[in-house]
Amino acid sequence: MSKDKLPRLFDGSIDELTKPKPKAERKSLKKEKMQKTLYISRDMNRKLIELYAEEGRRQSAIVEDAVNLYYYLRMALGEKKFGELLSAVKREDPEFLREYLSKFRL
Image (cartoon, rainbow, N blue to C red; front, side):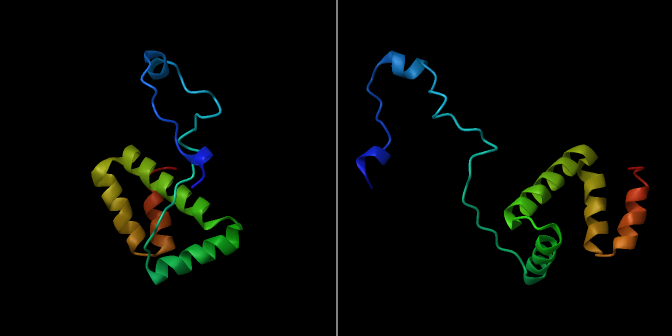
């Protein structure tokens, strides 16, 4: 590792602790790339490949959309309703899911 890649050590001054980081060093949590490892079933991989082919997007973008959808549906519906929705999704029947979602008046 080169010397310019090593993090700068704290020099012990109070100013160093209290002054904000320069804008160049600040990173947005949403923009920061992180390495992810997903272990998924072959069926899930097939579904991802199918979505990737239809939408022409990176798989990571599709996964991030799915995580956001899962998270906000869980927050909005609550545990009981979210559990019901997941059981409807696990049936893997688009018509049944369409009818179920029509009850929510979306």
